[in-house]
View 1 (cartoon, rainbow, N blue to C red):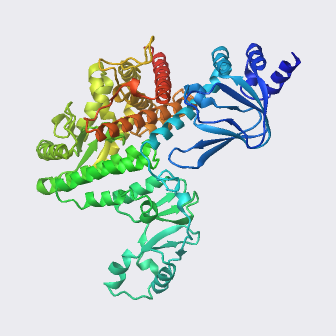
View 2: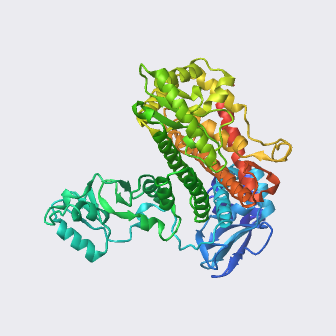
Length: 626
Protein backbone atom coordinates (compact mmCIF):
# COMPACT_ATOMS: atom_id res chain seq x y z
CA UNK A 1 0.00 0.00 0.00
CA UNK A 2 2.90 2.31 0.79
CA UNK A 3 4.34 1.69 -2.70
CA UNK A 4 1.04 2.69 -4.29
CA UNK A 5 0.89 5.92 -2.24
CA UNK A 6 4.50 6.67 -3.18
CA UNK A 7 3.78 6.17 -6.90
CA UNK A 8 0.70 8.40 -6.74
CA UNK A 9 2.61 11.10 -4.84
CA UNK A 10 5.42 11.05 -7.40
CA UNK A 11 3.22 11.15 -10.50
CA UNK A 12 0.99 13.91 -9.12
CA UNK A 13 3.88 16.32 -9.66
CA UNK A 14 3.26 16.09 -13.42
CA UNK A 15 0.47 16.63 -15.94
CA UNK A 16 -2.00 15.10 -16.50
CA UNK A 17 -1.68 13.04 -13.31
CA UNK A 18 -1.89 16.04 -10.97
CA UNK A 19 -5.42 16.72 -12.25
CA UNK A 20 -6.69 13.13 -12.31
CA UNK A 21 -9.15 11.79 -9.71
CA UNK A 22 -7.87 9.53 -6.95
CA UNK A 23 -9.64 6.40 -8.20
CA UNK A 24 -7.95 6.69 -11.60
CA UNK A 25 -4.59 7.36 -9.99
CA UNK A 26 -5.05 4.35 -7.72
CA UNK A 27 -5.80 2.15 -10.73
CA UNK A 28 -2.67 3.46 -12.45
CA UNK A 29 -0.45 2.97 -9.40
CA UNK A 30 -1.76 -0.53 -8.68
CA UNK A 31 -1.03 -1.69 -12.22
CA UNK A 32 2.30 0.10 -12.63
CA UNK A 33 5.41 -2.06 -12.52
CA UNK A 34 8.75 -0.35 -11.91
CA UNK A 35 11.47 -1.60 -14.27
CA UNK A 36 15.13 -0.73 -14.81
CA UNK A 37 16.87 -0.27 -18.19
CA UNK A 38 20.58 0.35 -18.54
CA UNK A 39 22.10 2.92 -20.90
CA UNK A 40 21.70 1.87 -24.54
CA UNK A 41 19.04 -0.73 -23.81
CA UNK A 42 15.91 -0.77 -25.99
CA UNK A 43 12.65 -0.29 -24.09
CA UNK A 44 10.37 -0.60 -27.11
CA UNK A 45 11.30 -1.51 -30.67
CA UNK A 46 9.54 -1.10 -34.02
CA UNK A 47 9.70 -4.70 -35.21
CA UNK A 48 6.15 -5.80 -34.36
CA UNK A 49 3.20 -5.62 -36.74
CA UNK A 50 0.75 -5.12 -33.85
CA UNK A 51 0.07 -2.10 -31.60
CA UNK A 52 2.17 -1.80 -28.42
CA UNK A 53 0.94 -3.78 -25.42
CA UNK A 54 2.58 -1.48 -22.90
CA UNK A 55 2.68 2.19 -21.88
CA UNK A 56 5.69 3.75 -20.16
CA UNK A 57 5.99 6.70 -17.77
CA UNK A 58 9.48 7.95 -16.94
CA UNK A 59 10.46 7.73 -13.26
CA UNK A 60 14.15 8.56 -13.61
CA UNK A 61 16.62 9.05 -16.47
CA UNK A 62 16.23 9.92 -20.16
CA UNK A 63 14.79 7.86 -23.02
CA UNK A 64 15.10 8.84 -26.66
CA UNK A 65 12.61 8.02 -29.42
CA UNK A 66 14.37 7.48 -32.75
CA UNK A 67 11.97 7.30 -35.64
CA UNK A 68 13.38 5.21 -38.46
CA UNK A 69 12.85 6.77 -41.88
CA UNK A 70 11.79 3.98 -44.20
CA UNK A 71 13.70 5.37 -47.14
CA UNK A 72 17.03 5.59 -45.27
CA UNK A 73 19.28 3.34 -43.27
CA UNK A 74 19.73 5.77 -40.43
CA UNK A 75 17.58 7.33 -37.74
CA UNK A 76 16.11 10.80 -37.61
CA UNK A 77 13.57 12.94 -35.74
CA UNK A 78 14.85 12.28 -32.24
CA UNK A 79 12.72 13.06 -29.17
CA UNK A 80 13.67 12.77 -25.52
CA UNK A 81 11.46 11.77 -22.58
CA UNK A 82 12.33 12.69 -19.02
CA UNK A 83 10.77 12.31 -15.56
CA UNK A 84 6.96 12.35 -15.64
CA UNK A 85 6.63 11.99 -19.41
CA UNK A 86 4.85 9.08 -21.08
CA UNK A 87 5.16 7.16 -24.34
CA UNK A 88 4.12 5.94 -26.90
CA UNK A 89 0.89 7.95 -27.15
CA UNK A 90 0.56 7.92 -30.95
CA UNK A 91 0.46 4.15 -31.65
CA UNK A 92 -1.78 3.50 -28.62
CA UNK A 93 -4.27 6.22 -29.57
CA UNK A 94 -4.38 5.18 -33.22
CA UNK A 95 -4.14 1.44 -32.44
CA UNK A 96 -1.31 1.05 -34.96
CA UNK A 97 2.13 -0.59 -34.81
CA UNK A 98 4.91 1.39 -33.21
CA UNK A 99 7.24 3.03 -35.76
CA UNK A 100 9.96 4.19 -33.34
CA UNK A 101 12.69 2.67 -31.23
CA UNK A 102 12.76 3.93 -27.65
CA UNK A 103 16.32 3.67 -26.28
CA UNK A 104 17.68 4.53 -22.83
CA UNK A 105 20.15 7.41 -23.12
CA UNK A 106 21.02 6.97 -19.44
CA UNK A 107 20.29 4.34 -16.82
CA UNK A 108 16.51 4.56 -16.40
CA UNK A 109 13.67 3.57 -14.10
CA UNK A 110 10.21 3.52 -15.65
CA UNK A 111 6.64 2.80 -14.64
CA UNK A 112 5.43 0.11 -17.04
CA UNK A 113 1.63 -0.17 -17.51
CA UNK A 114 -0.32 -2.66 -19.65
CA UNK A 115 -2.00 -1.09 -22.68
CA UNK A 116 -5.36 -2.35 -21.40
CA UNK A 117 -4.96 -0.05 -18.38
CA UNK A 118 -4.04 2.84 -20.70
CA UNK A 119 -7.35 2.38 -22.54
CA UNK A 120 -9.24 1.97 -19.27
CA UNK A 121 -7.81 5.25 -17.99
CA UNK A 122 -8.88 6.99 -21.20
CA UNK A 123 -12.45 5.88 -20.61
CA UNK A 124 -12.47 6.53 -16.87
CA UNK A 125 -10.59 9.84 -16.53
CA UNK A 126 -11.70 12.95 -18.48
CA UNK A 127 -8.38 14.63 -17.66
CA UNK A 128 -6.33 11.75 -19.03
CA UNK A 129 -8.55 11.49 -22.10
CA UNK A 130 -8.20 15.23 -22.80
CA UNK A 131 -4.43 14.97 -22.42
CA UNK A 132 -4.34 12.10 -24.91
CA UNK A 133 -6.43 14.03 -27.41
CA UNK A 134 -3.75 16.70 -27.62
CA UNK A 135 -1.59 13.93 -29.04
CA UNK A 136 -3.87 13.68 -32.09
CA UNK A 137 -1.63 16.27 -33.71
CA UNK A 138 1.18 13.72 -33.59
CA UNK A 139 -1.05 11.25 -35.42
CA UNK A 140 -1.52 13.81 -38.15
CA UNK A 141 2.20 14.35 -38.47
CA UNK A 142 2.79 10.59 -38.66
CA UNK A 143 0.12 10.27 -41.35
CA UNK A 144 1.69 13.07 -43.38
CA UNK A 145 5.07 11.33 -43.10
CA UNK A 146 3.67 8.02 -44.34
CA UNK A 147 1.93 9.68 -47.30
CA UNK A 148 5.08 11.60 -48.18
CA UNK A 149 7.15 8.40 -48.04
CA UNK A 150 4.93 6.91 -50.73
CA UNK A 151 6.14 9.56 -53.14
CA UNK A 152 9.72 10.14 -52.17
CA UNK A 153 12.96 8.71 -53.47
CA UNK A 154 14.94 11.62 -52.09
CA UNK A 155 17.24 11.71 -49.08
CA UNK A 156 17.12 13.93 -46.04
CA UNK A 157 19.98 15.99 -47.42
CA UNK A 158 17.65 17.54 -50.02
CA UNK A 159 16.36 20.97 -49.21
CA UNK A 160 12.66 21.73 -49.60
CA UNK A 161 10.56 24.78 -50.24
CA UNK A 162 9.19 24.39 -46.70
CA UNK A 163 12.36 25.97 -45.29
CA UNK A 164 12.41 29.52 -44.01
CA UNK A 165 14.44 31.81 -46.25
CA UNK A 166 16.84 32.61 -43.44
CA UNK A 167 17.93 28.97 -43.45
CA UNK A 168 19.13 29.32 -47.05
CA UNK A 169 21.50 32.20 -46.28
CA UNK A 170 24.80 30.36 -46.05
CA UNK A 171 26.91 32.82 -48.05
CA UNK A 172 28.39 36.22 -47.26
CA UNK A 173 25.98 39.07 -47.96
CA UNK A 174 27.70 41.51 -50.36
CA UNK A 175 26.47 45.10 -50.55
CA UNK A 176 27.71 48.60 -51.29
CA UNK A 177 26.64 52.24 -51.06
CA UNK A 178 24.92 54.07 -53.90
CA UNK A 179 27.96 56.23 -54.74
CA UNK A 180 30.33 53.32 -55.43
CA UNK A 181 31.70 53.48 -59.04
CA UNK A 182 30.28 50.75 -61.26
CA UNK A 183 33.86 49.83 -62.26
CA UNK A 184 34.62 48.83 -58.67
CA UNK A 185 31.32 46.99 -58.39
CA UNK A 186 32.01 44.91 -61.51
CA UNK A 187 35.52 44.15 -60.31
CA UNK A 188 34.18 42.97 -56.95
CA UNK A 189 31.49 40.82 -58.60
CA UNK A 190 34.10 39.21 -60.81
CA UNK A 191 36.49 38.42 -57.95
CA UNK A 192 33.81 37.04 -55.62
CA UNK A 193 31.80 35.22 -58.29
CA UNK A 194 28.49 36.73 -57.22
CA UNK A 195 25.70 37.41 -59.69
CA UNK A 196 24.27 40.51 -58.03
CA UNK A 197 25.23 43.51 -55.93
CA UNK A 198 22.77 44.97 -53.44
CA UNK A 199 22.85 48.71 -52.82
CA UNK A 200 22.09 49.79 -49.25
CA UNK A 201 21.65 53.05 -47.37
CA UNK A 202 23.44 54.11 -44.20
CA UNK A 203 21.17 51.81 -42.14
CA UNK A 204 22.11 48.76 -44.27
CA UNK A 205 18.61 48.77 -45.72
CA UNK A 206 18.35 47.75 -49.41
CA UNK A 207 17.48 50.49 -51.89
CA UNK A 208 18.52 48.83 -55.14
CA UNK A 209 20.05 45.83 -56.89
CA UNK A 210 22.39 45.44 -59.85
CA UNK A 211 22.82 42.04 -61.56
CA UNK A 212 25.00 40.58 -64.30
CA UNK A 213 21.96 40.62 -66.57
CA UNK A 214 22.01 44.45 -66.33
CA UNK A 215 25.56 44.77 -67.66
CA UNK A 216 24.80 44.32 -71.37
CA UNK A 217 21.64 46.42 -71.46
CA UNK A 218 22.66 49.25 -69.14
CA UNK A 219 26.44 49.52 -69.56
CA UNK A 220 27.88 47.70 -72.60
CA UNK A 221 25.37 48.65 -75.31
CA UNK A 222 25.02 52.33 -74.25
CA UNK A 223 28.82 52.44 -73.69
CA UNK A 224 28.31 54.01 -70.28
CA UNK A 225 31.25 55.38 -68.32
CA UNK A 226 32.50 52.94 -65.71
CA UNK A 227 33.26 55.85 -63.40
CA UNK A 228 29.57 56.57 -62.86
CA UNK A 229 28.03 55.42 -59.55
CA UNK A 230 26.06 52.20 -59.28
CA UNK A 231 22.99 54.29 -58.41
CA UNK A 232 22.75 55.20 -62.12
CA UNK A 233 22.39 51.55 -63.15
CA UNK A 234 20.65 49.76 -60.30
CA UNK A 235 17.03 48.62 -60.19
CA UNK A 236 15.36 50.60 -57.43
CA UNK A 237 12.87 49.28 -54.86
CA UNK A 238 13.98 45.64 -55.14
CA UNK A 239 11.63 42.88 -54.03
CA UNK A 240 12.32 41.85 -50.44
CA UNK A 241 11.04 39.06 -48.21
CA UNK A 242 11.51 38.55 -44.50
CA UNK A 243 13.94 35.89 -43.28
CA UNK A 244 10.98 34.09 -41.65
CA UNK A 245 9.03 33.86 -44.92
CA UNK A 246 8.98 30.46 -46.58
CA UNK A 247 11.13 29.50 -49.55
CA UNK A 248 8.05 28.65 -51.57
CA UNK A 249 6.93 32.30 -51.35
CA UNK A 250 10.17 33.37 -53.02
CA UNK A 251 9.69 30.62 -55.60
CA UNK A 252 6.21 31.91 -56.42
CA UNK A 253 7.44 35.49 -56.85
CA UNK A 254 10.21 34.32 -59.18
CA UNK A 255 7.82 32.17 -61.18
CA UNK A 256 5.11 34.78 -61.46
CA UNK A 257 7.22 37.85 -62.24
CA UNK A 258 10.40 36.36 -63.70
CA UNK A 259 12.69 37.63 -60.92
CA UNK A 260 16.04 35.90 -60.52
CA UNK A 261 16.95 37.31 -57.10
CA UNK A 262 14.99 37.97 -53.90
CA UNK A 263 16.51 40.11 -51.14
CA UNK A 264 16.15 38.83 -47.58
CA UNK A 265 15.69 41.27 -44.71
CA UNK A 266 14.87 41.19 -41.00
CA UNK A 267 12.05 42.98 -39.17
CA UNK A 268 14.09 46.22 -39.15
CA UNK A 269 14.41 45.97 -42.95
CA UNK A 270 18.14 45.31 -42.55
CA UNK A 271 19.69 43.50 -45.51
CA UNK A 272 20.75 39.93 -44.67
CA UNK A 273 21.47 38.32 -48.02
CA UNK A 274 20.19 37.25 -51.42
CA UNK A 275 18.38 34.09 -52.46
CA UNK A 276 18.70 33.34 -56.16
CA UNK A 277 16.70 31.03 -58.38
CA UNK A 278 19.71 28.72 -58.38
CA UNK A 279 19.62 28.53 -54.58
CA UNK A 280 16.00 27.43 -54.70
CA UNK A 281 15.85 25.16 -57.67
CA UNK A 282 19.17 23.75 -58.84
CA UNK A 283 19.56 21.25 -56.01
CA UNK A 284 15.93 20.18 -56.10
CA UNK A 285 15.47 20.26 -59.86
CA UNK A 286 11.79 20.99 -59.38
CA UNK A 287 11.62 23.20 -62.46
CA UNK A 288 9.17 25.79 -61.14
CA UNK A 289 10.78 28.67 -63.01
CA UNK A 290 11.16 26.51 -66.10
CA UNK A 291 7.41 25.95 -66.16
CA UNK A 292 6.80 29.65 -65.59
CA UNK A 293 9.13 30.41 -68.50
CA UNK A 294 7.24 27.95 -70.72
CA UNK A 295 3.95 29.65 -69.90
CA UNK A 296 5.24 33.20 -70.35
CA UNK A 297 6.71 32.40 -73.76
CA UNK A 298 3.87 30.24 -75.09
CA UNK A 299 2.35 31.42 -78.37
CA UNK A 300 -0.42 28.84 -78.77
CA UNK A 301 -2.51 26.38 -76.74
CA UNK A 302 -0.42 23.30 -77.52
CA UNK A 303 2.53 24.82 -75.68
CA UNK A 304 0.32 25.56 -72.69
CA UNK A 305 -0.87 21.94 -72.68
CA UNK A 306 2.73 20.85 -72.23
CA UNK A 307 3.00 23.22 -69.27
CA UNK A 308 0.05 21.54 -67.56
CA UNK A 309 1.75 18.15 -67.92
CA UNK A 310 4.86 19.61 -66.29
CA UNK A 311 2.80 21.17 -63.48
CA UNK A 312 1.47 17.72 -62.58
CA UNK A 313 5.01 16.28 -62.54
CA UNK A 314 6.16 19.23 -60.46
CA UNK A 315 3.42 18.68 -57.89
CA UNK A 316 4.32 15.02 -57.54
CA UNK A 317 7.99 15.91 -57.08
CA UNK A 318 7.18 18.58 -54.50
CA UNK A 319 5.00 16.17 -52.57
CA UNK A 320 7.93 13.78 -52.46
CA UNK A 321 10.15 16.55 -51.10
CA UNK A 322 7.74 17.26 -48.26
CA UNK A 323 6.25 20.55 -49.45
CA UNK A 324 3.16 21.14 -47.30
CA UNK A 325 -0.18 20.61 -49.01
CA UNK A 326 -1.27 24.22 -48.42
CA UNK A 327 1.87 25.46 -50.15
CA UNK A 328 1.45 22.90 -52.92
CA UNK A 329 -2.11 23.92 -53.81
CA UNK A 330 -0.97 27.55 -53.63
CA UNK A 331 1.77 26.82 -56.16
CA UNK A 332 -0.59 24.89 -58.45
CA UNK A 333 -3.10 27.76 -58.30
CA UNK A 334 -0.39 30.32 -59.05
CA UNK A 335 0.79 28.41 -62.12
CA UNK A 336 -2.82 27.94 -63.25
CA UNK A 337 -3.24 31.71 -62.83
CA UNK A 338 -0.32 32.20 -65.21
CA UNK A 339 -1.95 29.88 -67.75
CA UNK A 340 -5.24 31.78 -67.49
CA UNK A 341 -3.39 35.08 -67.88
CA UNK A 342 -1.61 33.76 -70.97
CA UNK A 343 -4.90 32.55 -72.54
CA UNK A 344 -6.40 35.99 -71.84
CA UNK A 345 -3.33 37.66 -73.35
CA UNK A 346 -3.56 35.54 -76.51
CA UNK A 347 -7.28 36.21 -76.90
CA UNK A 348 -6.87 39.94 -76.29
CA UNK A 349 -4.78 40.07 -79.46
CA UNK A 350 -7.73 38.54 -81.31
CA UNK A 351 -10.14 41.05 -79.74
CA UNK A 352 -8.61 44.50 -80.33
CA UNK A 353 -11.95 46.10 -79.40
CA UNK A 354 -11.07 45.36 -75.73
CA UNK A 355 -8.41 48.08 -75.75
CA UNK A 356 -10.77 50.78 -74.49
CA UNK A 357 -12.61 48.66 -71.90
CA UNK A 358 -11.51 48.64 -68.28
CA UNK A 359 -12.19 45.17 -66.84
CA UNK A 360 -10.90 42.52 -64.43
CA UNK A 361 -11.03 38.75 -64.89
CA UNK A 362 -11.84 37.11 -61.55
CA UNK A 363 -11.53 33.53 -60.32
CA UNK A 364 -13.96 31.96 -57.88
CA UNK A 365 -14.25 28.64 -56.09
CA UNK A 366 -11.04 26.71 -55.41
CA UNK A 367 -9.02 28.91 -57.78
CA UNK A 368 -10.28 32.02 -56.02
CA UNK A 369 -9.24 30.45 -52.71
CA UNK A 370 -5.79 29.38 -54.08
CA UNK A 371 -6.68 25.75 -53.32
CA UNK A 372 -6.70 24.16 -56.76
CA UNK A 373 -5.86 20.54 -57.38
CA UNK A 374 -6.04 18.63 -60.66
CA UNK A 375 -9.69 17.63 -60.53
CA UNK A 376 -11.25 21.05 -61.00
CA UNK A 377 -13.50 22.85 -63.45
CA UNK A 378 -13.76 26.54 -64.29
CA UNK A 379 -15.32 29.11 -61.95
CA UNK A 380 -14.72 32.64 -63.21
CA UNK A 381 -16.29 35.97 -64.05
CA UNK A 382 -15.64 39.53 -65.22
CA UNK A 383 -16.03 42.90 -63.51
CA UNK A 384 -16.01 45.91 -65.83
CA UNK A 385 -16.03 49.61 -65.09
CA UNK A 386 -19.37 51.40 -65.33
CA UNK A 387 -19.75 53.81 -68.23
CA UNK A 388 -22.35 55.10 -70.67
CA UNK A 389 -21.41 52.21 -72.96
CA UNK A 390 -22.17 49.39 -70.51
CA UNK A 391 -24.32 47.39 -72.93
CA UNK A 392 -21.85 47.59 -75.81
CA UNK A 393 -18.93 46.78 -73.53
CA UNK A 394 -20.75 43.76 -72.17
CA UNK A 395 -21.30 42.30 -75.63
CA UNK A 396 -17.60 42.67 -76.47
CA UNK A 397 -16.58 41.10 -73.15
CA UNK A 398 -19.01 38.18 -73.55
CA UNK A 399 -17.57 37.35 -76.97
CA UNK A 400 -14.05 37.54 -75.54
CA UNK A 401 -15.00 35.47 -72.46
CA UNK A 402 -16.58 32.79 -74.65
CA UNK A 403 -13.24 32.35 -76.44
CA UNK A 404 -11.24 32.29 -73.19
CA UNK A 405 -13.58 29.80 -71.48
CA UNK A 406 -13.43 27.42 -74.42
CA UNK A 407 -9.65 27.73 -74.71
CA UNK A 408 -9.33 26.82 -71.03
CA UNK A 409 -11.64 23.87 -71.66
CA UNK A 410 -9.34 22.68 -74.46
CA UNK A 411 -6.41 22.85 -72.06
CA UNK A 412 -8.09 20.59 -69.51
CA UNK A 413 -10.09 22.98 -67.32
CA UNK A 414 -13.65 21.72 -68.01
CA UNK A 415 -16.53 24.13 -68.53
CA UNK A 416 -18.46 24.65 -65.31
CA UNK A 417 -21.60 22.49 -65.14
CA UNK A 418 -23.26 25.22 -63.10
CA UNK A 419 -22.39 27.79 -65.78
CA UNK A 420 -20.41 29.96 -63.37
CA UNK A 421 -18.17 31.34 -66.10
CA UNK A 422 -17.36 34.74 -67.53
CA UNK A 423 -19.19 33.94 -70.79
CA UNK A 424 -22.45 33.71 -68.81
CA UNK A 425 -24.12 37.18 -68.88
CA UNK A 426 -24.92 36.77 -65.16
CA UNK A 427 -21.21 36.45 -64.39
CA UNK A 428 -20.06 39.30 -66.63
CA UNK A 429 -21.26 42.41 -64.80
CA UNK A 430 -20.33 46.02 -64.19
CA UNK A 431 -19.24 47.24 -60.75
CA UNK A 432 -22.75 48.41 -59.82
CA UNK A 433 -24.35 45.25 -61.18
CA UNK A 434 -22.09 43.07 -59.02
CA UNK A 435 -22.96 45.19 -55.98
CA UNK A 436 -26.66 44.84 -56.79
CA UNK A 437 -26.31 41.08 -57.14
CA UNK A 438 -24.50 40.67 -53.82
CA UNK A 439 -26.98 43.04 -52.16
CA UNK A 440 -29.88 40.85 -53.28
CA UNK A 441 -28.22 37.73 -51.88
CA UNK A 442 -27.45 39.47 -48.59
CA UNK A 443 -30.61 41.55 -48.02
CA UNK A 444 -33.16 38.98 -49.16
CA UNK A 445 -31.44 35.70 -48.36
CA UNK A 446 -33.01 32.67 -49.95
CA UNK A 447 -31.67 29.22 -49.08
CA UNK A 448 -31.63 27.93 -52.65
CA UNK A 449 -30.16 31.13 -54.09
CA UNK A 450 -27.49 31.26 -51.38
CA UNK A 451 -26.61 27.62 -51.94
CA UNK A 452 -25.62 28.48 -55.50
CA UNK A 453 -24.02 31.82 -54.65
CA UNK A 454 -21.50 31.03 -51.92
CA UNK A 455 -18.84 30.33 -54.54
CA UNK A 456 -19.06 33.98 -55.64
CA UNK A 457 -17.91 35.18 -52.20
CA UNK A 458 -14.48 33.63 -52.86
CA UNK A 459 -13.63 35.81 -55.88
CA UNK A 460 -10.04 36.91 -56.54
CA UNK A 461 -8.49 39.05 -59.28
CA UNK A 462 -6.52 37.19 -61.96
CA UNK A 463 -5.95 39.62 -64.83
CA UNK A 464 -6.76 43.19 -65.81
CA UNK A 465 -7.56 46.09 -63.48
CA UNK A 466 -7.18 44.57 -60.01
CA UNK A 467 -8.62 47.70 -58.36
CA UNK A 468 -12.07 46.74 -59.64
CA UNK A 469 -11.96 43.47 -57.70
CA UNK A 470 -10.31 45.05 -54.66
CA UNK A 471 -12.94 47.78 -54.46
CA UNK A 472 -15.74 45.23 -54.74
CA UNK A 473 -14.14 43.11 -51.99
CA UNK A 474 -13.85 46.13 -49.67
CA UNK A 475 -17.48 47.12 -50.29
CA UNK A 476 -18.69 43.52 -49.82
CA UNK A 477 -16.83 43.04 -46.57
CA UNK A 478 -18.20 46.25 -45.06
CA UNK A 479 -21.75 45.57 -46.26
CA UNK A 480 -22.00 41.88 -45.37
CA UNK A 481 -20.47 42.05 -41.90
CA UNK A 482 -23.50 43.85 -40.40
CA UNK A 483 -26.24 41.69 -41.96
CA UNK A 484 -27.01 39.16 -39.20
CA UNK A 485 -29.94 37.51 -41.00
CA UNK A 486 -27.67 36.82 -43.95
CA UNK A 487 -25.25 34.90 -41.73
CA UNK A 488 -28.10 32.90 -40.24
CA UNK A 489 -29.18 31.74 -43.70
CA UNK A 490 -25.57 31.16 -44.76
CA UNK A 491 -25.03 28.98 -41.69
CA UNK A 492 -28.30 27.13 -42.22
CA UNK A 493 -27.16 26.19 -45.71
CA UNK A 494 -23.77 25.07 -44.44
CA UNK A 495 -25.42 22.84 -41.83
CA UNK A 496 -27.33 20.96 -44.50
CA UNK A 497 -24.04 19.24 -45.29
CA UNK A 498 -22.83 17.21 -42.33
CA UNK A 499 -19.66 15.17 -41.81
CA UNK A 500 -20.26 11.52 -42.77
CA UNK A 501 -20.01 10.00 -39.30
CA UNK A 502 -22.47 7.21 -38.52
CA UNK A 503 -23.99 6.26 -35.18
CA UNK A 504 -23.53 2.51 -35.51
CA UNK A 505 -20.54 2.40 -37.84
CA UNK A 506 -17.46 4.44 -38.59
CA UNK A 507 -18.61 6.36 -41.68
CA UNK A 508 -21.82 7.00 -43.55
CA UNK A 509 -20.96 5.98 -47.10
CA UNK A 510 -22.82 6.31 -50.39
CA UNK A 511 -24.04 3.56 -52.70
CA UNK A 512 -20.43 2.99 -53.80
CA UNK A 513 -19.33 2.46 -50.17
CA UNK A 514 -17.38 5.71 -50.49
CA UNK A 515 -17.31 9.24 -49.14
CA UNK A 516 -16.61 12.37 -51.15
CA UNK A 517 -13.59 14.04 -49.55
CA UNK A 518 -14.54 17.36 -51.14
CA UNK A 519 -18.31 17.53 -50.61
CA UNK A 520 -18.30 15.64 -47.29
CA UNK A 521 -14.92 16.89 -46.12
CA UNK A 522 -12.99 19.97 -47.18
CA UNK A 523 -16.12 21.84 -48.34
CA UNK A 524 -17.51 21.74 -44.79
CA UNK A 525 -14.48 23.63 -43.49
CA UNK A 526 -14.47 25.97 -46.50
CA UNK A 527 -18.06 26.92 -45.60
CA UNK A 528 -17.25 27.48 -41.93
CA UNK A 529 -14.18 29.61 -42.76
CA UNK A 530 -16.18 31.68 -45.26
CA UNK A 531 -18.94 32.42 -42.74
CA UNK A 532 -16.51 33.42 -39.99
CA UNK A 533 -14.35 35.51 -42.34
CA UNK A 534 -17.29 37.48 -43.73
CA UNK A 535 -18.70 37.96 -40.24
CA UNK A 536 -15.47 39.17 -38.69
CA UNK A 537 -13.99 41.39 -41.38
CA UNK A 538 -11.37 39.21 -43.07
CA UNK A 539 -10.69 40.08 -46.72
CA UNK A 540 -8.90 36.78 -47.31
CA UNK A 541 -10.31 34.15 -49.64
CA UNK A 542 -7.95 31.29 -48.77
CA UNK A 543 -9.48 28.90 -46.22
CA UNK A 544 -6.41 28.53 -44.01
CA UNK A 545 -5.77 32.29 -44.01
CA UNK A 546 -9.43 32.94 -43.20
CA UNK A 547 -9.14 30.72 -40.14
CA UNK A 548 -5.91 32.45 -39.10
CA UNK A 549 -7.56 35.86 -39.50
CA UNK A 550 -10.38 35.06 -37.07
CA UNK A 551 -8.36 33.45 -34.25
CA UNK A 552 -9.61 34.96 -30.95
CA UNK A 553 -12.39 36.82 -32.80
CA UNK A 554 -15.09 34.28 -33.57
CA UNK A 555 -15.87 32.75 -30.19
CA UNK A 556 -13.76 29.65 -30.80
CA UNK A 557 -10.57 28.76 -28.98
CA UNK A 558 -7.21 28.97 -30.71
CA UNK A 559 -6.96 25.21 -30.27
CA UNK A 560 -10.24 24.71 -32.15
CA UNK A 561 -9.20 27.00 -35.00
CA UNK A 562 -5.80 25.34 -35.31
CA UNK A 563 -7.62 22.02 -35.32
CA UNK A 564 -9.72 23.28 -38.23
CA UNK A 565 -6.60 24.26 -40.15
CA UNK A 566 -4.87 20.92 -39.54
CA UNK A 567 -8.03 18.98 -40.39
CA UNK A 568 -8.54 20.91 -43.62
CA UNK A 569 -4.94 20.39 -44.71
CA UNK A 570 -5.12 16.69 -43.87
CA UNK A 571 -8.25 16.17 -45.97
CA UNK A 572 -6.64 18.13 -48.81
CA UNK A 573 -3.58 15.89 -48.54
CA UNK A 574 -5.74 12.77 -48.78
CA UNK A 575 -7.47 14.22 -51.84
CA UNK A 576 -4.17 15.00 -53.55
CA UNK A 577 -2.81 11.54 -52.77
CA UNK A 578 -6.00 9.97 -54.16
CA UNK A 579 -5.75 12.03 -57.35
CA UNK A 580 -2.17 10.92 -57.92
CA UNK A 581 -3.10 7.27 -57.40
CA UNK A 582 -6.01 7.48 -59.87
CA UNK A 583 -3.88 9.31 -62.42
CA UNK A 584 -1.14 6.69 -62.13
CA UNK A 585 -3.73 3.97 -62.79
CA UNK A 586 -5.14 5.93 -65.78
CA UNK A 587 -8.51 6.21 -64.03
CA UNK A 588 -10.82 9.27 -64.08
CA UNK A 589 -10.02 11.70 -61.27
CA UNK A 590 -12.54 11.72 -58.44
CA UNK A 591 -12.84 12.92 -54.85
CA UNK A 592 -14.61 9.72 -53.78
CA UNK A 593 -12.60 7.43 -51.55
CA UNK A 594 -13.54 4.17 -49.84
CA UNK A 595 -12.82 4.30 -46.08
CA UNK A 596 -12.14 0.55 -46.19
CA UNK A 597 -9.07 1.30 -48.32
CA UNK A 598 -7.58 3.77 -45.82
CA UNK A 599 -4.96 2.57 -43.37
CA UNK A 600 -5.96 2.59 -39.70
CA UNK A 601 -3.97 5.74 -38.96
CA UNK A 602 -5.63 7.80 -41.70
CA UNK A 603 -9.00 6.40 -40.68
CA UNK A 604 -8.40 7.56 -37.12
CA UNK A 605 -7.30 11.07 -38.11
CA UNK A 606 -10.19 11.44 -40.57
CA UNK A 607 -12.66 10.50 -37.83
CA UNK A 608 -11.11 13.09 -35.52
CA UNK A 609 -11.36 15.72 -38.27
CA UNK A 610 -15.02 14.92 -38.86
CA UNK A 611 -15.76 15.03 -35.12
CA UNK A 612 -14.17 18.47 -34.90
CA UNK A 613 -16.25 19.68 -37.85
CA UNK A 614 -19.38 18.33 -36.17
CA UNK A 615 -18.53 20.22 -32.97
CA UNK A 616 -18.02 23.49 -34.85
CA UNK A 617 -21.25 23.05 -36.79
CA UNK A 618 -23.09 22.50 -33.50
CA UNK A 619 -21.56 25.68 -32.08
CA UNK A 620 -22.63 27.67 -35.15
CA UNK A 621 -26.13 26.19 -34.96
CA UNK A 622 -26.39 27.28 -31.32
CA UNK A 623 -25.08 30.76 -32.11
CA UNK A 624 -27.68 31.37 -34.81
CA UNK A 625 -30.49 29.49 -32.99
CA UNK A 626 -30.78 26.81 -35.67
